[in-house]
Image (cartoon, rainbow, N blue to C red; front, side, top):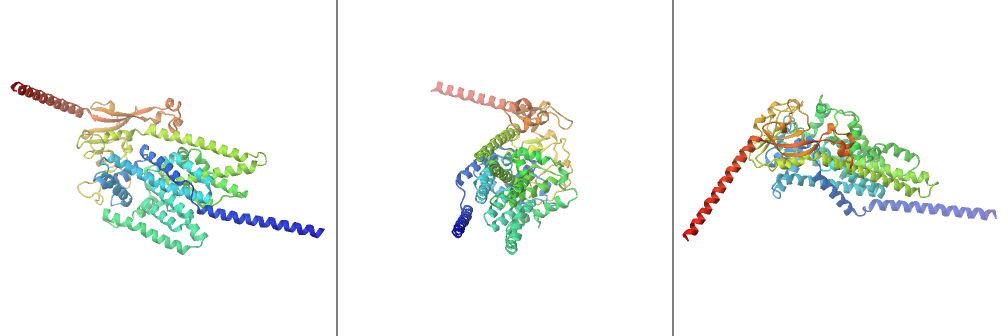
Length: 601
């Protein structure tokens, strides 16, 4: 009896072990199949991303004057032979490559045959940038789905789709945005097992775009070289990618600068080894990026910051997330460490890791979902469904705040983009449009009609402003002495206000010796005016988010004016009256002639 009982127990244990082994094999096969199968309904995902990014291309305004003067203006010069030149494009310094703007200039020239108006060319380029961003995000979504499953992929999609930060960055004509596209495609290729494509995209983003994003490839390099021991393969990938990217950069810059130079190396040396470097353009406290991150991702941003400790605690409790999470959290934390410690801070510097912020927040939401069901499952059998309800509540709050932020950006700050469309309709040939204290909100020469010029007048700003490209010679290789790398003011950039036919100015009820309220001065008449937020007289919450019923009561608006010289208006009115008088006389003469002909008949 005892032997029979032992034999039965042994048989039962063997069956249980065999069943567990079969389940593990089946689970491994399912996991492998999941990694190989494509994400479902990718066409709908791509269409959703494309619609939102095209809307951003049309509705968003330019948030950084660097985008205008360092990228839109050289593109306009290469396309239409006029525009502003910053010191970074001076051959003496050569900090910027012409390859990146040259690609867009080629696109602008091609679009000019379709759209004769430059404003349409401007928005078409932005739509192209938004489409490129949507393609990169769609690839990233598919890779996340295969690597981590549907829950994390869908959470990432919702966060990225509605993020105000993505609304700003997806169509920005900036190297940091281009680096965001490239890094996103690089990690997508790496998650899919294509290491060669990953290295190539990192090289494209670093050399053609922004050299500093090369540090974001450290997890990929570690995985290829240290974890898998494929140093020779990585060296081959690196050499091929480097030669493919650096060769066109050197050739294009040699043609336009007329000298052999490595622009990615030049900008690295200036920002890292120069004694003054980027600090010349202002410094911000440590909290700048925290405040900025909450505006651009609201409650998803603190979740992303806490992703690493939450993930560490989850793994200690023997929780499991499919995929190598640490490798995908490392880029965000590496980038934050560098940028938070740098004294010069700008919103655009965080663009390259925006997709990783969304991914980190999505991972935390997954951990919350799993942990809630695990911890409280003994007390409430429907706790898993309750955690889904909580996460749905988070997304409702997140989407509402994101829409409120985007609405605030459109409602409060869009006046310059609307007003410069009126500037483009200026009828006078050779008109001079002057910019004073509003030089930094100039969207680009694409909004100035051909034959007219935008010029600067003296204001309270004491730094260096860009000069006009030389138009009688090729301005890309002409050395100029009226530019410097120390942000020192160059008086030669200003014109006398008497030369101005039009003037763009913001009136918020405050004036100074060099910044009067031109719309109240004799000699100028406002022909167009749009409301623009007066941030000094508005409450922080009301101007950060558009809250119906609250924001309008706690914000104040100034007036964004397009002013025209009164003398010019009078001359045009006199000319119009003279023309009308001549037309009336000609009409009367024609009527008398017809009457005489009728009498003779």
